[in-house]
Amino acid sequence: MAKNVLVVDDSPTMRNMLKAAMQEQGFEVTMAEDGVDALKVVAKQKWDIIITDINMPNMDGIELIRELRQIETCKFTPILVITTEGGDTAKKAGKDAGASGWMVKPFNPDTLTKAVQKLCA
Image (tube, rainbow, N blue to C red; front, side):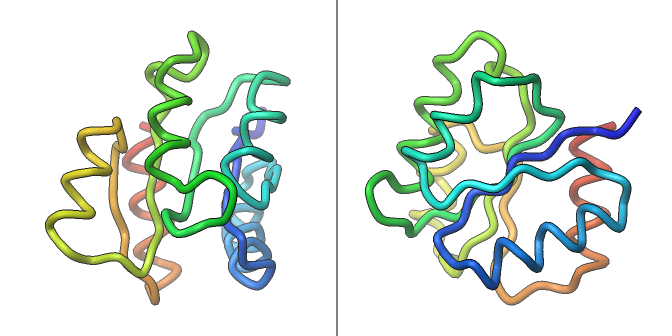
């Protein structure tokens, strides 16, 4: 049975790239444009991993992670942050919110695959 991934990013190009990479690994992919959109779809099923950007309109990734960690079915779901933010302050904010991993854009698709496999193991 395919694993389910929720991809949250305000960039259509990034969403489509992540979708292609995840589908290649056998994942079923659902996409959301921002944190508000993600919270609307997150309750519809169980997720094996959630991949989110940080800098998004309406609700940023840090707030999304905090909100997800309050939802019973997402308390322990791996959350991988993929962002242009590489500073220690941003990483600490993500970790404090409940992020499971952090990857800086641009990234190698193989690195993404390995990170997702590790987090889903």
